[in-house]
Image (cartoon, rainbow, N blue to C red; front, side, top):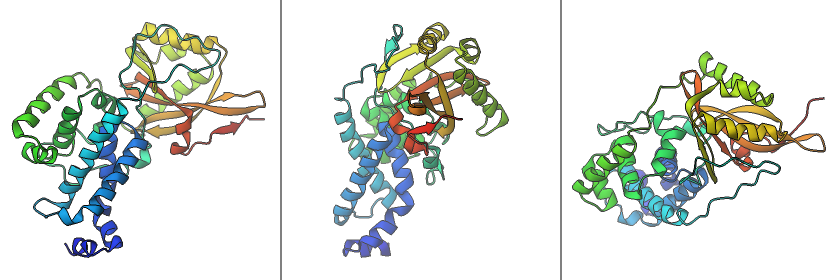
Length: 329
């Protein structure tokens, strides 16, 4: 632990070198905990600052990785209390009157993450407790389901079933007991039992590309019938931070009919989010440009779309997409 000794002596470069191997997986951990990339980055910076300031208290009885995850988990639990007080956003799409939603969502401040964040996806040596596949652990459906859990259940599940810490380790990290962690795991597993469904096509496969291309063609043409033909019977449409949610084929059809019926026409640029096909959506402006209108993330089940999540246009730069584009001549 030569780097730690140097860091304790005030060497900032040594500290940065010591924590560098864990930085990416700490960021993913914060994202799973918070469901928001911006909040995850804030929590990561708070974690690293607290670790630097508290380095004298690191007694090396646990690994540096475990110590850092303990700090990050508590920073995220604190952030969750603040996030719970944020109001949802009102419907703000001009010229479109949405149909009555199936329900109002509980997870208003969800954000997607660019696939670049998934580089080197495998977390460092997940332990024997890990049950959740690494690719599944960053999928939008899983991240959304996590945000519906109470904070302690959320932390216990991520620490044990994604990162593979033993229940005894998680209990120490949370300042809890093994019985409490095991109880939280049991409840969280029951809450997430319905997340699984028919698997999507392999990432970057011809089958995945075909579904994404058919979606883009249907959406750009405002072809409601072609779009509906791509959707599963239990398709789920959401648009955080607006809480409106549409579940089932009839509800989703009504929603897209309202969008297309208002005369809104889109151009889509492909990207990826959370390991899934995604598109930046652009709508024509009076001056001939096309302004960013949102980011669509598709969740696939087999050869159809089981969920479509629309996010704010302000997120487009995170995915390497411009805020506006020129219309073709």
